[in-house]
Image 1 (tube, rainbow, N blue to C red):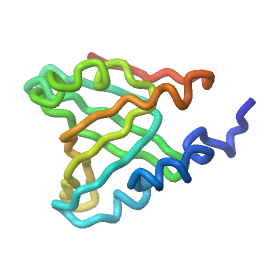
Image 2: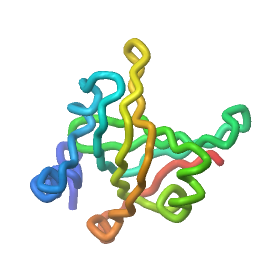
Image 3: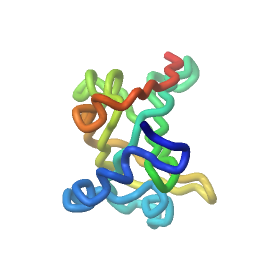
Image 4: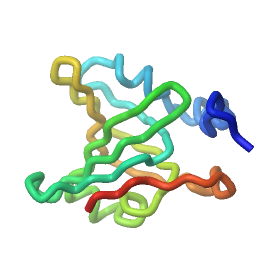
Length: 126
């Protein structure tokens, strides 16, 4: 029941904004070292063998994408969220290196309940 011009987060944006969740587009403009809370559908998860156990996740909302870095310590603390959430809320610190922007996660929350009836699936490379 969704068109290519509609994204599930668009409907959830008022509730997310009330919880301090910024859009992916807005987080990408924040200065290095800023704190941010971002939510999005998990579209990819990667844990390359060369990354010392770090998990890279890509979240998508109605404004774009957010690149999330989940270090091993946070993966242990939030294992289910890191590996299973279809809609994830991430608290973290903005890390900017030129045009490349990441959100280094300090807390992960599974918000899948809000999109339970929406057919979503991430591409996981672990």
